[in-house]
Every structure is written in structure tokens, then in C-alpha cells.
Image (cartoon, rainbow, N blue to C red):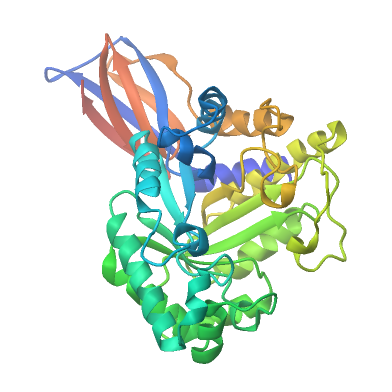
Length: 412
């Protein structure tokens, strides 16, 4: 896919062209200069928000560092993922880390960001105390946990990775855990039904995702079985940890075409691209690659910047994609890899600048002075999202919510 075709597809699927008429006291606001800017993208440009939980609760060890990181984060993103790994959220049964997560979620939402919880059910980092229960009791504890979280966080977190990595769940053999035991006993599709039913009952308005790293036909078979069973899935989550190298446009588009045929929105839920050496190709489980030091390099940073731009352009050009979540703002996160937009010392990499330009300049609308014509009209062409017009200190907000032509009349 060339840059030109990228841009054509992006415009086709993401951009609205609006004729906006401004009216004051019933008369057109003719021949006046106003300021126009985009306030928020409708597309969800996301990243983990794990890094800000201590800052939000007032327990940060380095609030100045966190403030700098927050400013960088908000320069790119409008969508935060928070951690609900059961083994860390409730290591002791009946003592969940609810208050801290509530503070973090409310703080992020209060800053205008959509918040997602990840995950509600997963065999990895699950609660060790499940091993003391029989499978019926594990199922009850799992569904109770889902109802508790989706009810308590409703209105603040209304998007959830309900279940993570079901393809491997019943055959996972790295260590014993209660969720694998249960899934092996009842099967993948009944497992998905159980957890989705619990989440749907507790928060009927939530966006519920089926999330996996397995891009093989096995995930397609699971999706088909789930849908044939009548289980309602709101979106598919596709992971793209590219620790072994950039997928490239052809592979990415092939995956998108395969998984978009179900007619469901697609979220790229866990994306990483490295600015250091890539992981050897013979590694089958990325978690098995453990090294003492994994530095970012100038050559790697230049490569990462190019790959970030290519990957985001490819995803944004596809109509099925609604969200991209990058897995970690800073280096040294998952597996200690140099996968962030920010180095360990807090300085931004070239990849940060490249994505910042895409999101805010090429795909966004910075504050711009424009003049209405003799009929009080102005033309707005921009990415779908929320916009604001300011005239003599007065503000009026409007949304571009459909691609193609729109006509709006606004009283200011």
C-alpha cells in the first residue's frame, strides 16, 4: 500500500466535509473571523494508563516525572487501558484493589479520556486462591468477579476485554491455574458464553471484547463458533506485539481482511514496535525471552519511527478498525523491551514525534483562524470527532460524526 492510497482510504473512511452556518440572534454571523479546532478524535488512539495509577491516587514517588509523562501521553492519546489482572487486583480473596482503580479510572475519565478495563478473565496472572476451589466454585467466583467489576465501574469504564487468549486457555501448560482448569472442563465456547453473559447482565451498555494474540485460523474458528452459538460480541481485540519484527502492510491488511469479515469492529488492543534489536525468530512464547539489558539504539529508533507511521496509517486506513492501543508509553515495560515512545530518561523518541504529527497535524485540526462568508458559512473538513468554534470569547461545540457531506447550523 502506497502513501497515496493510504491517504485516499483514510479520507474515505475517516473524514467529514461540513458546511457550518453560524447564526447570532437569528441572523447569519457574516464576515467574522472565528477560531476552529478539534477537541477530540472519535477514533480511539490508546495506550496503557497503568503508569498513572499512583499519580492519580496521590501516592506517586516522583510526581514531576509523572506530570511530564502525562503531558506526553495526552499529546497522543484519548483512550486508556487500566489493569484488572485478577491475581494482582485481588491477591487475597475478598480484598480487591477497587478504590485505587476507581480513583485512576475517574481521574482519567475526568480528563476526557475513554477508559477500558483489561482483562476480566484470563488464565495468566489469575488469582492463586482459585486453585483451592473445585471447578463449579471457580466458575461462580469468576462470574461474581465480573459482575462486581462491571457494576462498580459502570459509567466510568464501559469498555472491557472480557476474556483474554481463549484459544490457548484450555491447553496452557506453563503452570497450573484455576481458569485453565475450568476452561479445559467446560470448553472454550461455554467459557466465553459464561463470562460474556455475566458482563452483559451487569452492564448492558458496555462494549465487550473478545481479545487474543493468536492470529491463526484457530481464532477464526473460535469466533465463528462463538457467533454461531448466539453469543453477542461487540468488538474483536487483536494483539500485535511485534517484538520479532514489524508485520508489514501486506500481513497487517491480510489479518484485517480475515477478521473484518465477521462484521464486527476491530480494536488493535496491544501494539508494540521496538527501537532496539528484535527478538530472535525461533522464540515461540515471547515471555521466554529474558535478557539482562535491552537498550534502545539510534538505528532502532529511526526504524521504529518509520514502522510506527506505517502501522498506524495502515490501521487507520481500514474501515473496520475503531481503536489502537499501544502497550506502554515508556521503555522497559513488558519484557523490559525498548518498545515505548519515551526513553527511560523521559525524553521522547522519533516515534513520538512521528505519531504526534499524524494525530494532531495530519489527522487533527489545531486552532486555526477562519472567516465566515456573507451567509455566515465556513467549510470544515476533518477527521470524525468533536470540534469547537470560538468567537469573541464565546464557544460552541459540534461533532463531525459521519463521513461525507454534512450541513450544520449553529447558534453562537
